[in-house]
Image (cartoon, rainbow, N blue to C red; front, side, top):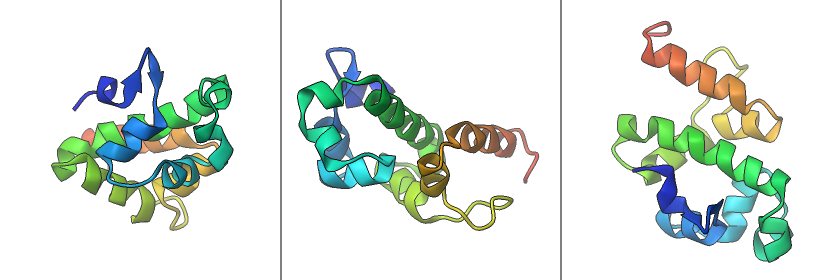
Length: 116
């Protein structure tokens, strides 16, 4: 599905993301490297930093969703599957350390057959 399903009024909405992924907003915050306060207070949810982290996480999940058949399985992959070439780190760990772009590049490379 598209990223629009996770948004409300043009912004990523943690509660919509949590509902789609069958988890809590607090868990979404942890998965994106945010404080729980960042997904509870409207002014914090709308901040550039919070929206960037939510976007990075959802871009990755959305990009691998077709591979797994559901957003829920893609979310599980994001949180738990070590990526080759990244010292056993998961996509989530890489996002938390500011390396979301590298994860997206890795996914593109896999899709292109580089790591097949």
